[in-house]
Image: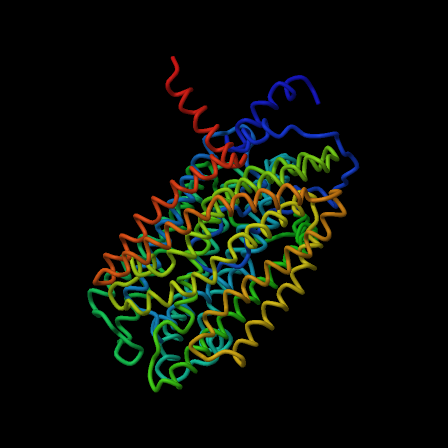
Length: 613
């Protein structure tokens, strides 16, 4: 390495890492160097597919960006972090509005099935390729080709846009068959509603693809702000469509009373949100200097080799999407069985309830763990290149412990406040208080999966840093089987109305089994996983959270004695949450939990710098 690169390295490290990781690294100096770590292939050959199991308008924040993030641009990290928060916040509000408009009975379930299908079809056939293959491929062509990769980009865009157009037309024509695949239990008017909504929403496939392509091309140009912020536009427009539907159709619409015109208003409004998102990204790409001239020839582009290199990554994506398919079928059939048993629609027993709880469940991970992963992945890749297994192990351990310092109180808080929180945010319009409580009950089961889910995601990033896509793909197969078997078993072992409560267990098993397999493999490769320090940290963090949990539970019980529903629930969440949060940090400080100390030391350092001359 030449002298200028050596001088730049401290600045790069300071810019890339969140300040708390930097603080933790200073307090935890590395031990004796352990060399000999060999990458399976160049980590730059394959990008990061994110969680790979989230069909919906809020796209995953990592994608290829963590792999391609520029090492010298602090502004990009800040823009990405803020964009992530706004994207998830508006995505949550979008979920609240759709819940208020449609409720959690058969009409709400039909919309959720229809809304899921275009994103799942796109992710299976193209989205996984964009994230895991095209970003690193285009980055390399941009660096190596004499024209900066312009010809390759034009070829890729031409072929993919044509494929998207054909796929969109075929999907719209096959809407009835797709509903049979994802919601085979639907019959009568509910099936008609689902098919109509699906047909309207499938038009989104083309524009979802345009958004994905534009985001990819912006990522390779190191323009990360727009891909993080554009989903906000989509969410706001979909919220407006939901509110307009609620105003025109009124509360309490069912599959029997809703009209096709009202469904068209909601479906086309939601689709327009995706059109607007793609337009924002296309305009941003044009402003970045990209000009497209159609080319349809891929011969000699090298893309086929890149796709073959990522074949194991695509296996992982397919298995995750099959899990989405299984969950959708079990949830929709459970709702139909519950309606048959009760002699009428039963709110809170199907797909809508599950999807609403899933959105809330992934908020802590998306806001906290994603920022840690985005910082750690390039660092771990650099350590792999140096053959330093000790530094890769330290980064993994540090990332998990720092994430857990905030995720432990959040998952416990989710457990305590799930029901009053759901009543506070969801019990409006067509979604009753009882329906909101059902969302809260499902969320309580999901809460237990927060740490296993985060552990799995961090372990997968160690494999990506090693350039190993084969092992995650192979691990996903038994994990996916465990999820599918458990989900289908619920159909026979659990009363219909309670099946939705068990689906988070099936979902979590994918990550538990996957994490167990990953730990077995990585312990051998890294010479251990720093398990003792991680276990001690997790134990101390949970002990520090116990007074906060007790305070929160007391607040929920105490305010629950008051008359009414929404106001006592809101008071329980606000008073219990703020008081419990303060108790957690105070207790952790008294216990001298180092992971909390890193956060407070960072904050104190920032305050000192801001108050200086």
